[in-house]
Image (cartoon, rainbow over all chains, first blue to last red):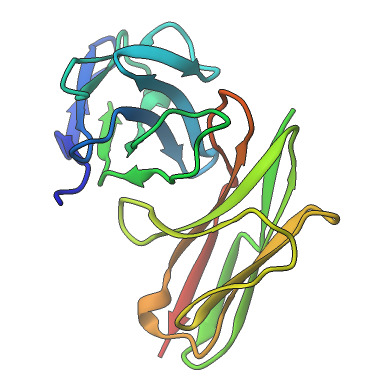
Length: 117
Length: 111
């Protein structure tokens, strides 16, 4: 079974631009979560989607948004990029959503390394 | 505020050494604790611990959870250079909530 894939793998943008990152979950997985990873803050949760609905959102400004499509693929968008947005953006998929019924774990993609100049 | 704290932040050992990585947590509605290994990019799942005192093993790696003292340890015996990675601890809470991650322990194993 193919793993989680993320595109692009590397991206360089300048301040003020916007960026869209893509994540394709493992086949059959319907939940996609996004994380930002930086050396100083570690892994921080951005949002989770399940069946095209955002179920959770972390403490990030409104410049960070996402969506999920009917085939469970997800995109994350960051508008008006700032230098501090430079990070590794990881996507993780799981079969079910967060909640009391969750017993499965999340499987991570290789990430997109975003550099903002 | 829920938090997960890992220690040490980094560690350098020689091949063959045994290491113990620590993870303590303060969260509401704890459900499970997870360990991941991150070598270059994608964290890969190691263990999920839900019950106190039950050790989980996978080869040279083992982990145990203490729900009374709110911590977990990850042991790696007879370390190899391939064990060099960042080890992440995360807590899964009940309810519709996401994982909370610690900042990780960077382990470097030198020959």
